[in-house]
Length: 295
Image 1 (cartoon, rainbow, N blue to C red):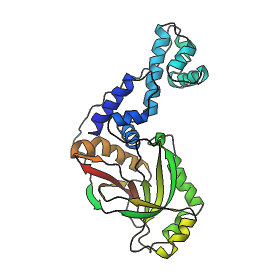
Image 2 (image 1 turned 120 degrees about the vertical axis):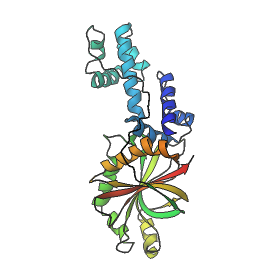
Image 3 (image 1 turned 90 degrees about the vertical axis):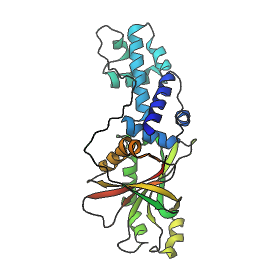
Image 4 (image 1 turned 90 degrees about the horizontal axis):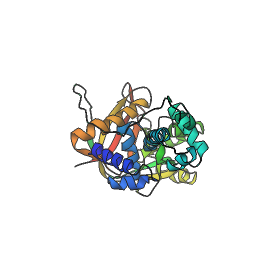
């Protein structure tokens, strides 16, 4: 179960909080890919792994500054900062006071304790889904690489910005015209990541099917478009209703917090994607297709 694995990851992080923590090593400890670990952690915990580690270290640093004679410089290096200046800036942002002020009696500091994840089942809500099987598929796509750390970072808009950039450069519409009218659905493709990789690929694409104009494919490849291939697999499919991408994030959160614990399915290391329909039902933002297997 994903929740139990993330709790194991938190225990590992706490045991090595004073050391340089390798996210790849943490992911291996819980038998997850680097990418899926980052994604699962942030949806279940509500913050990125980096943010969790930063808050815990700054909490421990404040306690040590208050109760021992450790210098600000030594504290900075002990808690993983490259300089006392970068440590002081991070400390001030989190606590609202400087490390020097933390040494004084009466200083107000923030406390961020180790997380213990509990499963709370709340009745009355329905999460509609269906299981679909798809054989291997191919897409024509605009592809860009992103660091794993941006996954579910609320302050990061790299992927929406990628959509905007491609739209403004008029790269999406010509691609859609390769399909017949009524079949010009757009796909947001997210690649599986191997354990050693620190980045994942995201693609904006269209499906190569029987309605696709293959005579123009070579020209698109020469102009920087890519062929994206997926493997044969089962998918859990969810409809995301809303006016913006927030409904997509909410669906991912429910997938990890509700769907996985209660159904016996877990995500696999295959491409997941969103489908943005040319002619979708009213209020539908997209469909989310998550590759899964039953455990």
